[in-house]
Image 1: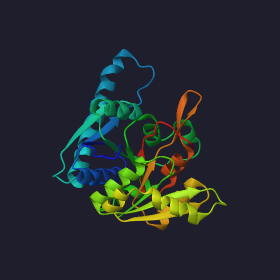
Image 2: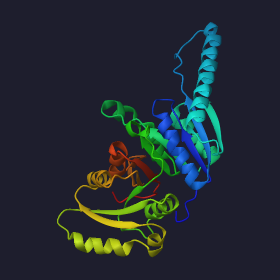
Image 3: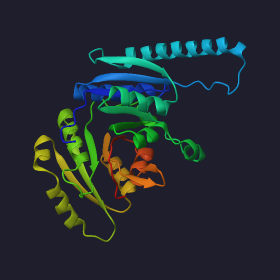
Length: 287
């Protein structure tokens, strides 16, 4: 993705308290990329499994009221949090959130998805998973995941970007996107490589310095960092220490039986990062 320049951005909103912050993040990137914004709400009504014919009119009325309320709520969010200069459209679609988002992305072919994550944990996550994680697992569209507790405070601009690199693919897709966004927003970029304990950090730092392309250095300020330990833990620590607004991470997928599973590092960073996480799709994985 050396020329990542999305012309349109899909922003699914669930109308929770976090939605305002997610919309501000979408507006920030729409401004950076001069993109149009499609704001989507999936209205999911849990109809009773069995109902009498006499109840059909009542259930239809419930659907109409819910849809009207969602349209009004989205209109209020847009009026308060989206600058008028950003071209946009609003859509309310009845259906399961994951299926609705994926189908809308298939139909409208956005260059980027911006959405929130509620960061569920425990058995509820094990049974259902988060909408954001499922979308990242199933879509081929780059996706920015905004962690809900932090989403209410979207930055006025992106100032620091952290980009973990494995140094096993040149050009690195994450580095190309991170550098482009850093150049667009004036942000500084930290290139991070994590190695297992026991290796020479200085040797790998020299490799990392050589790995960063010259054209990246001409586009933005770059600092290199090599850490030892668990990849996810070190990415999270580096993001907090550097006060990163954004982590750009190339997703690593692996096959488990008949399913595609997000790699453990990507999954852990998405769940626990304080910063927003920009996940780039990948067709293969070495995690």
